[in-house]
Image (cartoon, rainbow, N blue to C red; front, side, top):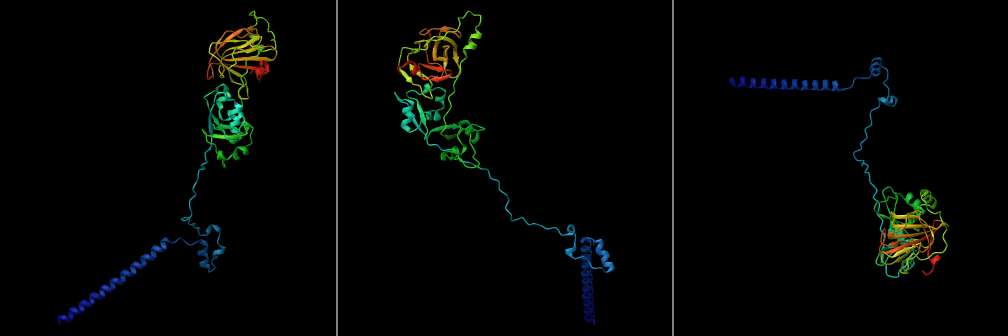
Length: 349
């Protein structure tokens, strides 16, 4: 009897457990539905009205653009743009060198390498400032073709270089060792070859005869006189160390420092002093007939501007001042401001 009662109690307990489990399941489902309804957007007013009146809801094709669902674009596999900086090649020039020997001339050196004498200036800019530096033992840079090896400066462009030398941009680009490619970047502190170009020679202009006369009015200086039109050597030596050519508009005569220098012709001194453009101590005599004579690199000066000198008068002494590579005199003759070959007027060169 006791065993039957225990069995009934166990069955009642199982029934209670099943009932509780069922009630719990119904509670969870009701909670889920309530959460979904709370999260769902409210229905459109039009849709509610249509539902109430039984009217048909608009289709997806009839919906306004702003009611359309947003389009999500997946860019996960689209590569990002990678900016790149252009790195151009730097020029690569094959240059030779040559050491000047005794008896060399600019034309002779140029002929050895198949170039023009002016190209010696193109590779050696110092020569365009003072060609007296073309002396025995000096090492020159020899360019492979005629032209100018231009030192690129900050701000230089192909257009500015083209304008400077009067050479087309296409010619500069076309020279392969320049390594120029679009967008044609130039690198400061490198060198660009300008084929066919000729380096300009700086020409210093002395004071005019009129300006010297006006500055000395009332000083008792005699009126300007005209020279004889003939010219003598300013020194007794004929030891020429440099002749006249495009890069050297005069003659150089080597001789010991302190040798007397005389006026090549009669005229008026228009300059006597230190010249900052490479001449060193310089005397200029204006001969009143369109001609001027220059006496450069002197160690001593014996005249003053405005003074009249006569052919053969001592005016100074030879030296090694300014851009000079040894004791000598640099002598020029200019006709109406144009540098001419002194040998044409004196002979014996």
